[in-house]
Amino acid sequence: MRRSLLASATAGAGLALGLSLVGPGPIVQADVPAPARAVAAAPDPRPNIVAITADDMRVSDLEAMPRLRSLLKQRGTTFARSYATFPLCCPSRASFLTGQYAHNHGVLGNSPPLGGYAGFDASSTAATWLDRAGYQTAFVGKFLNGYGTVRPVSVPPGWDDWHASVDGGHYFETNLFENGVREEHHGPYQTDLYGRIASDVIATRVPRRAPLFLWASFFAPHVGAPRERDDPGIATPAVAPRHHDDFAGRPLRTSSPAFDEADVSDKPRYVRQRSPLTADLRAQMRESYQQRLESLLALDAAVGRIVRTLRRTGELSSTVVLFTSDNGWMMGEHRIHAGKTVVYEPSTRVPLIVRGPGFPAGLTRHQLVGNIDLAPTFADLANTRPRVRVDGISLLPLARRASAAAGRRLVLEAGPRTRTGPMFYTAVRTPRWLYVEYGETGERELYDMRRDPHQLVNRAAGSAYAQERQRLARRLAELRDCAGRGCR
Image (tube, rainbow, N blue to C red; front, side, top):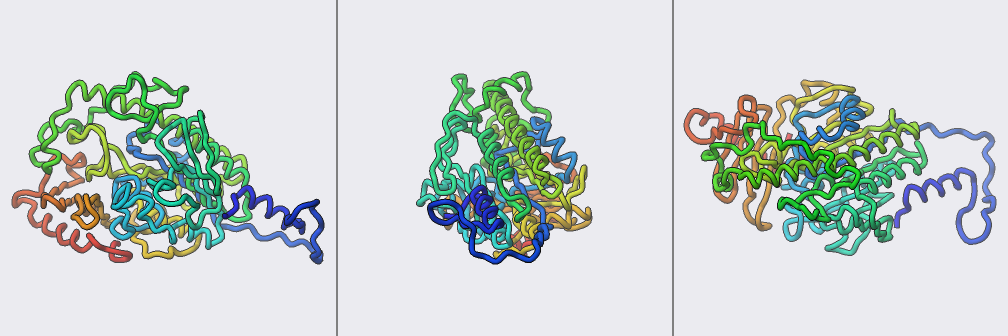
């Protein structure tokens, strides 16, 4: 079993003093020659990397996180067009770790036989690349869906310090597998617990012995137990008691033209079958919206705690802090009252904010980026190379130059229902267009995202946009099964 960073710190300190830490009895001086003159090792110039992720968070949910906006957004680079290329928890997290589209890493769902942790090859990930490159690696929070429940629980390759949820989903009963030992935490609000552990990882490691790669993976604002007695019907996250009803007066966001879309006759069948949102359903959605924001207040505090710990330890200026979500969430757009996986912007677009060396303060970039770009970025920061064929690119050149990757195209995908069945959809997103093909029904969608950012008018039918539709269909055919450089 690999040692925790705290244990490594203790051992490292002993070895640095020429002490023997092996066996019973008192610590004795090791029989080693004393150096003629102590020579301090040069500090490692590479930055620490702290990745903080939310679960099911919309871009608009940033309204509930003033600390994040102050500490990261105002002092870092915002990637305004960041996408979850497969907007579902487990496939997205696998892309986060590998830099690959789901059609390459093979995790196509949250559970077997389509995917889940049991279907993930953890032998080559950002953790193993950075571990081999000399980084200290640590994980805290929610890993891939099904971790610890569908195979013998163990620490995946590449991680030095491991604190992962085994039976997630309850905000006040958290079962963790921590460096080989199961630990049950009864009572603490889960977001606070993860924030404390992540901060302790930062505070107790050996500063600058080696840079740190930490992934702090939070569950909020995902729905979770316990259900409230006045549960509105739509499942909600559980809120920390101190934040209960903090957003009770906040009205539901209904200003988007896509909210409860009046005319869905040009949408695919699964949308056309939806009825307009009733008053009762809107009331349930409002309660869900308020509790989602309330759950994010604790996550905002955890972000603040992590940044304070980095500052207190003198590591903040040499740390890249990244915040994002595994996917977005629908809140009434196109009559979809809740959920994800669909191709529409609230589901696929996610916040992405990066502070630290290489990412200018107060800057917004508009190139298309995706979760497939995070692992290549981590490798670039660590001055190492990915050891799989990545589909994504590093964000560092994009932060430096607005023209970098300006004409880039992304694949968006979801599905299938069975392992060998057709994908629910595959799509190509360009700086201007979104073109979608549905695998089972053969339906198509085409949106001019420059003129129609809310995806109201499907241009796939008729002759007016036939040339553009054909061009994008050819491009999608090239990218549908792309890998590596062929995806760029």
